[in-house]
Image 1 (cartoon, rainbow, N blue to C red):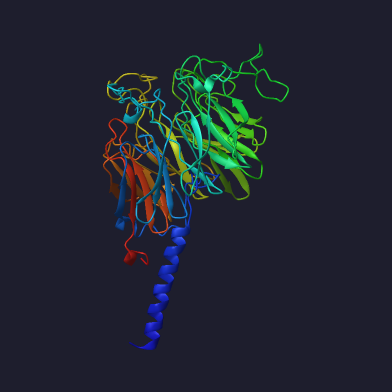
Image 2 (spheres, helix red, strand yellow; image 1 turned 90 degrees about the vertical axis):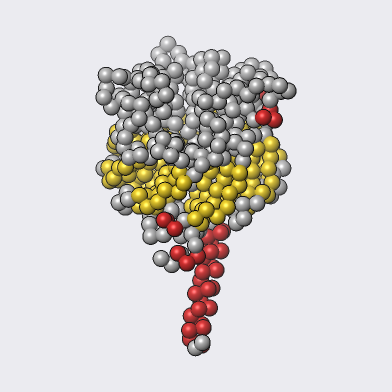
Length: 509
């Protein structure tokens, strides 16, 4: 072999090895990848030209569904399962590094078998909203923060040992409320870590309890502040505030839900959340709203509630905010269960544009979005009412109010909300995520189980990666790999963490 040709081959091998190492060192350390919730990694080696070549590399099976997105830091994957365990997995091999058993919370269905008493029959799980762990972990400074049931945990990333845990109460005025076995508080929100605090929301959903937004001290888990989403109001309809500016208590009527995960503007020191309704009523001042809170003190900076919400319809902001910058302007965007994506000025929460794509409803509308700076990509879920019984529509006289609504995946222009492309047969409760020009969207199962990959520019379906369970979380693209979690809510089939990868020969295409 000629020396020049040998040198070229050596250089090619060196470049491939370096690039693969760089890919391995990339991180996806929290829900949405960052505090902006871009759900995007343009440095991924996966692109429209090779996405169709992705192959299953390894599988890590769990005994129940995994609906949290994979967090990846330093070649370790972190995710919890409805089986009551939180796992750390080697990202290269799929081998278990360690696992941690969370506390049982039998108010949440499905109940893991090890939490049942002798001879106790598991409660029916068909209508479960989500199991014991739905929260995506945040990894910061060698610590892993996540929630299970109504408890927030901090584990050491290296070995899974417990640093602290904090029980969030749905009835905080009650003495020893953290010991209440009937408290139905559940944390769907994923933690965001900033300024030495862990920001998280929670929901209750039963009379006698309420949801809220909280900030915990990242070092010891003590509560720094709590923002009441369903505060006690005075005769003028305004929250009754204490000396520090916080609401004095709240109504324990099962309201104040916060499914949303916090996005954080580190320059403005603002924390953004979406909120749910009060028994399908958009009760002012904070239900079915997007809120901006001062990160340090938890005081309200601004709020946005859509002006045309309909009473008796499920119109939660269950998705999480996206913080988007374009042409010197800073925006916040979020899709609601009303089937509308809203773009607001970030500092004031004044509306820039709103784009409605479906009617939305109780199991419809938006659950999360990704963006690349110029475009926003988001899927919508099923629709309204109960598709199994064909009942429960909010407004049957509206022809758009259906049990199954299309189109179900959408691309918008950030500048003016123009719909760039839409596709059908992609009903999803997972946020989309992005590699280099590829949009991934997990399927709930109406069209079969799998993960769709679209060309971000054209909307062309590049490939559907088949799965044996529903994909209810955002996929994580890093380097030449794509990490996916799955599991069917009704019976737990197809549960686990999965790694897809590109063959090395495809990386240069």
